[in-house]
Image (cartoon, rainbow, N blue to C red; front, side, top):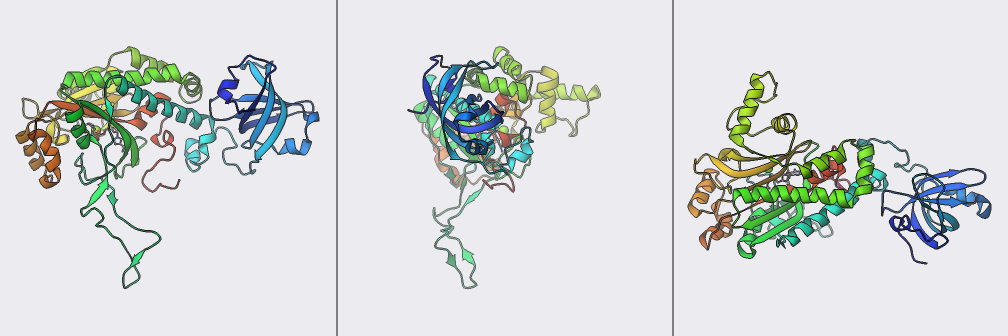
Length: 464
Ligand code: 4AD
Ligand code: MG
């Protein structure tokens, strides 16, 4: 008989039927008259209980089936006597696929996440990581569905690039090195052929520039792919390799852009509430007792829209009233996370979309306001997370854009193809980037970005 996933077994009520399940043993409790094996196959947070009559099986075989073992079971669906589940399996046959060595690192419950990070290859088998990974999958589906349903085209931008979108110089360089055919120089040192592309290339920090090419041809596009930043920041919010979603839309203005940001995030959060119930309930119980409540309030409430200048006024007011910040507050500064936190968590107690930033602290491509000082950038700031989205209306005026490029000493010859969008039928347009892992942090209530991606890449860590 064909395998039935645990998620489906638990829905069934055709008692008496024989089903086949395969999975990993979560726990095995045995007594003289009966053994209980909790089996999980990753399809759901829930286990199916396999009830074994030990008199019908080889005792030494049964004894070897410990936590972490992989088994194949045929059993009869029976109504469960225990609380918390309606069905269980009365075991007819057991086959051992793989026993689990006694030093299995995921054996004990309640290990710290820090401990589990050392076992990124095995932590996926724990309840928490199973829940997080299923939610991660669901969020990816929600994102594609949202954009597809709204007429955006999924657009693939290159990972290897010769330009630095954010102008921060935090790029991983691309070189070639054939591991099996290493060139050696006279001193026996390994040499690299750095000229594969005929110019220096890096891993992309953002697909935006190419995304703008897509939007100014197809109308509305979105990217969804890996992004790389060689920033040496060891924080619970930064990865060297993360996934970013970047919609880019022609003929959009600042208000419509902010509406899109808000509507999109709410859609994703609602999707999780609708489609990840069991996993969210588990995380709500184990990780954060206010999680589901917070998700619901984000969907039902509206985001605050705040001018940067107004934000600075609020922070200055807070300082006057005795609030202590580590970094001083003044117009022109880039907000530190303590400032964002204050606005979002203490002052408004809601997500905030901030706009009208001083142009000096933002990237070259943002549309300059009439005042000549501020730009139409929008950051979405979230409770617990900080910046979850960074976006802007783009400067579509050729001369103004050149001015900003020059002011920042960005090499113009590398940007010729980008500048062409402003030369040939330029149009108002804008877009944003959502950090996928930061969204997953918010939706799962997890505290560290290393724990919402299967194999995190951070400084000094690319083990798995
Ligand atoms: O604010 P950022 O740097 O904006 C851009 O890259 C724009 N080109 C996006 C656009 O307009 N198309 O990054 C966007 C988002 C941030 O708000 C944050 O959520 C996430 O990407 N992000 C990171 N996430 C994890 N680790 C990092 N090191 C991140 N850097 C940015
Ligand atoms: Mg940003």
